[in-house]
Image (spheres, rainbow, N blue to C red):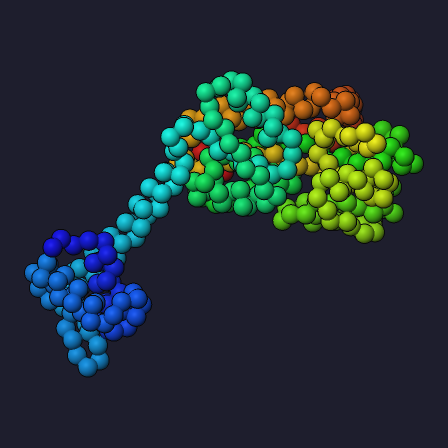
Length: 339
């Protein structure tokens, strides 16, 4: 008989428990079955591994050697198994790419660009309102890449299995009904909306806390908040029952207008993450490029955002101007060595 992984687990269980009976309970085996297996293992290694007494068992010098080696080998075998499962999950026979994303229109535009550039690539997508859930899926190998985001002044999770890159940073604008008294304003101070009810989507994002902090800086607390899905939030805005917040690239439906906030107190970072050991590393730089181009297209397709950028670029260039600079434009892909 040759030693196997399960045999080392049995030896380790006996050594940790100090008793064959207790070890059998932990392993879900009958005491007689574990005792018989121990005898076969001892025959295979050529000597006794444990001395038995009324107090239980204690390892012989040979047992100490095997236990010490098992403390190295067992974690290494578990890690090997986890890595192999992660790799098997990430590498699919069709050579496809699995991309996750939180809410937003960037995912659809990214898929359009990827499939146009690589018609042979099978792209599948997953969506979640939880950025940490998507990051965990990437870390576990269930996704190759994920598009997520966080408030502009925050950093993404420090999970050492992941690498992060910035797609873009956008200001946050306000959504109002086109029947709202302030709907014709070019820009709005947040304090002028102190009497509004607000519609916000659910989720674990930091954005709700960042919004509350911005309201406090503006001198008020939100009157009330409707937590609802995106469609319901838009309905509440369109019916003039609430205001809402959106990314600057958002294209409003009929009956709703997008108005920049002045000064720009809130911003949103759009991020791409990948696993450090994912087999899809070769595609990640291409995905980042397409994500940045999709964002640039969204900016170009938003008259309100492009006008806001133009105004702020002009004002930021004037001598003595204290207006904030617009968010950084997308830059060429550059892979950092740390998140």
